[in-house]
Image (cartoon, rainbow, N blue to C red; front, side, top):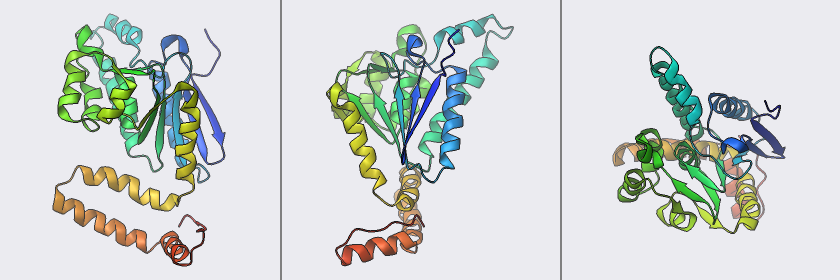
Amino acid sequence: MSTEPILLVGIDGPKATLTMNRPKQRNSLSEDLMAAISEQLAALAEDPAVQVIIIAGNGPAFCAGHDLKELTAARAHDDRGREFYAKTMAQCSAMMQAIVNYPKPVIARVHGIATAAGCQLVASCDLAIAADTTRFATPGVNIGLFCSTPMVALSRNLPRKQAMEMLLLGEMIDAPKAEQWGLINRAVPENALDDTVAQFANTIVRKSSLAIAFGKPAFYQQAEMELASAYRYVSEVMVNNMLARDAEEGINAFIEKREPVWEGH
């Protein structure tokens, strides 16, 4: 048994990187790995010094989805795995929702492959930067297991026809196509991946963390509303944001042609 932690945590000033560390299993999402990610996200949410989270994978792949050996072993249970499968899907769904509902931006640093729940993880992050050699798929249909939970995140990123193409065909798409379809923000040469992720993260941390804390949840909330309700909701968000000291400072700095000094409130 490996003594290496299954999740590596690195802090670089206002940036925190969570690196999935099951390289031999292509960082498949075991119970323990999902628990570790969820626990670290919760801990970092309470750290005011951390403003951006980066999720990465160690080894040859970003994430190959759920751990199929773990799922298969549960078939030996008296209920043929029903309780374990229900628990696993609920755990995964909670983790993905935690990323969407997270108060800080989350960036996926993607390489190798991102398949099934790994593709879901990419789609759940706020931003995604991938090496141009990365391939993506929701291939469950190929093994008799439709990617229904990945479909939730996928269908909220891609147009319907493209999402259904991935779900029904189960075929790999390359990074340039993933960028074209809207699954990722950028497909870049592998040797530029870290620099591009850092560029995105560094740009974000120069902004008001309070403004982002207002804006990120509002983005996802309004997207699920009908038009009039969305405008009512975000108008109230804007009012509260305008009353914050950071908005006052930012507007004054713009008028006075100087750099703002954020206070975070």
